[in-house]
Image 1: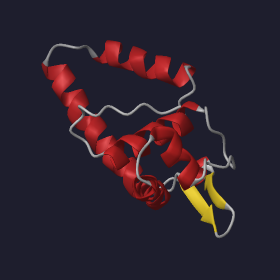
Image 2: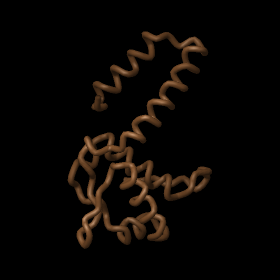
Image 3: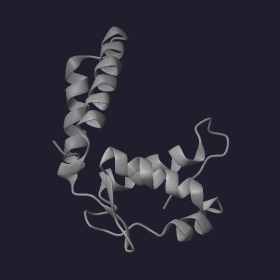
Image 4: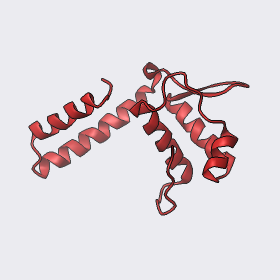
Length: 124
């Protein structure tokens, strides 16, 4: 499910957050699906439950997860993803695109990659 890299400079909670987000975006976790309990995932990954709780809270802030008191955390509908996160990602996309164009990657090549990602299941 999730892979932690202890040599990665990012904090563990960010790795958990990114891993769960990747599973949701890829469709491995579907809308309304219950996430593992904080204790269960912490036990599986052999890390502190507070780390998992922090990752879940960050995902909820981004709009990828919602909580139901007493029931747990669930994958949020795709339409609920925070607009600020989308804007930050688009800004990163613009910066990377500009650098790739500077390095000689053609616009056609970039478009082909975008179309391939869309075919693999990316959402518009």
